[in-house]
Amino acid sequence: MNKHYRLLGMLGVVFGLAGCVAPQNYKAQEPKVPEAVERPSADQPSTSKARTSAKLHTELGTAYLQAARVGVALDEVGQALSYDQTYAPAHLLKAQVYVELEQFSLARPEFEEAVRLAPGDPTVNNTYGWFLCTQGQEGQGLQRLEMAARNPYYATPAKSWANAGLCYLRLKQDAQAEERFTRAYALDDREPMPLYHLAQINLRTERYMRAKQFVDQLMNRQEPDADVLWLALRIERKLENTESVRRLADKLRNDFPGSAEYQNYLQGKFE
Image 1 (cartoon, helix red, strand yellow):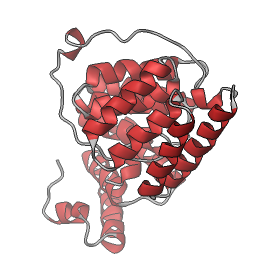
Image 2 (cartoon, rainbow, N blue to C red):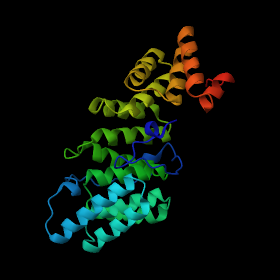
Image 3 (cartoon, rainbow, N blue to C red):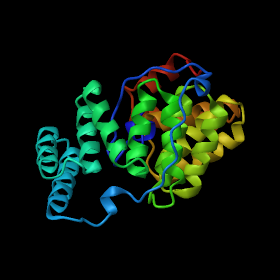
Image 4 (cartoon, rainbow, N blue to C red):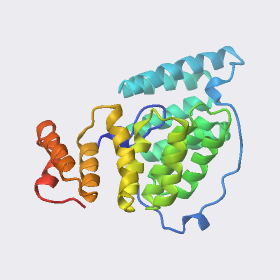
């Protein structure tokens, strides 16, 4: 499916990360993350010229990373840290650059340094929490994501709730994932990703009319891609709406004839 529906990412940039699913009893195995609440470091006023320079280079580096100019982003973060080694967002950005390069062993100490410098920063906790989820440490990741989501200074708590939903999906815990996606959607109904997963969860749990409500909302707000059409088609099939199935299959054939979803339709692989 489209990356946009799979991952929220961390600073508006979507990064695909490797990882494995933790055991179902992960909560008993993970240490408790200490609670802390702070304003995002990037929103705090600069206290020195060095901090102002570090902030400027970090903002530039973030823009370059979002533009997929990873090398320039790494140069900018190096400049930022040369001015101020204690600026947590610079360490966070450096970690994200290493994630983009799939150098996860280099990313981890940068995440940890950002957390050490700003343990209650919701942006740090959201970003590091998602990284942990993708690295098989879902328990710790979920704790940090929910710390971020509950931080009253965080401007985008829906992002952390949705990331928590994705993390629970990795653990195959649909009920917990559904609760987090519902929270995310209640806070920001412009983001399509929670709708997609709410429809999927309701399809899996045989609540077909509710699944249809979610996927209809998703399709009404933007032109659907192949995975959304396929999800809608499978829901309509469960509801035995033959005409809707035919219409969606025609659109899948016309718009995405080479897609895996259309091949699954032709082969009758609906599950």
